[in-house]
Image 1 (tube, one colour):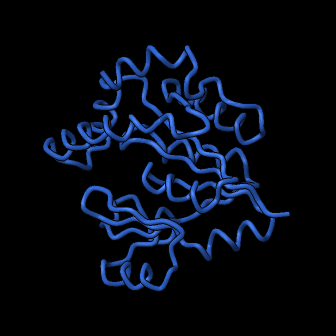
Image 2: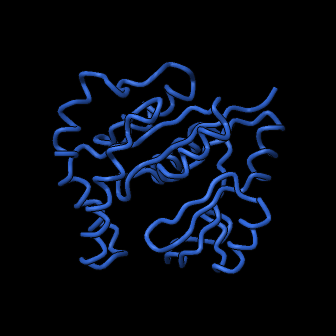
Length: 203
């Protein structure tokens, strides 16, 4: 039996990576699909752990060879999902988490309509700004650009099967676990409870 595929997307700074790492720690049966990227590794990152870091020439070679299930430009860099890596996990019966942006998620849903897609939202624009500043990895100019782009990213929330609001971290992790176990989310596109959050984020 083929493993399930969970696609997790979010605007920059919403806490997607931290949530996925916490989910994997609590659910050892899940596998993480490691994406390829052309961006420079951050100080805390290791090749093959967070990403497969490649230069643009190698990324283009892989793309041209059809190695990516999806790929997209994000903040002047490219990101892509290895088709072979994903198939290996799923053919072995392992459930896989794919952590990507909304553009990539749209491509994956087209290629794998059976996937379950989850969008992570911050509780407010103020919280998003604070989280981006707390990372201490970007200049003030880059942070402002990320905030502007985040509004556009978040407008795609209703393309996803479920929405998790990362206000209280541990609760957000439990929301993800509930989705993985088939229990469904507290929030979903169109749910009344989501409207106050969206008014703050998308106004």
